[in-house]
Length: 230
View (cartoon, rainbow, N blue to C red):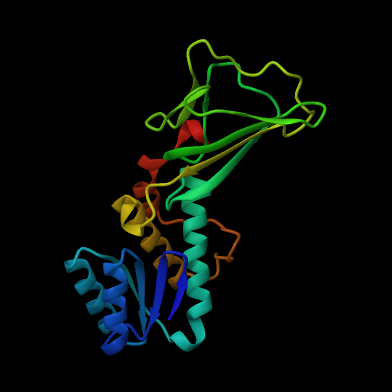
């Protein structure tokens, strides 16, 4: 058995101990890839996980040769769906936005929604002196709009900033810390991508997505695209 962050690849998942481990991991909120040379057994495991409210994908593979390949497909599917197509954060993660100047408006939209919280806003002047803005005092966090907003009577600092990368904003984004927190349409699209790329290997390069995206996966992901936060 191998795990890729919050995605669990379970080998020999079509029966016995492997099936039990798969069901247990799904109960803990993991997205399970049930891999077994017995495809029917793997599908039965997925059926049982689904009946219990879990999330899983069945793959019929000779796992002794293909564990690394499947894990690569899982990483590639998430990378494509998150950063290339939807421009969102799925599982809760810390992100950093670096700017060279303050925005013109009194608010700043943060990329890769949904926004959870802002950890810090630090800026450095031309002399190399760092300072911070204080949450609640200087700005408010509007998670619904995925942005931070200056409080009334507060303005962006007027000091001369260093020439490049003077402003650093650290924040948390994502639907939650469990795979089950991610919208069902997105999870299903990832399953389609992994299964499709496994069956159609030539157009796929792990770590560098090369076309051949099923229309069904794009249709599921499209409503979740963050057009204003790319």
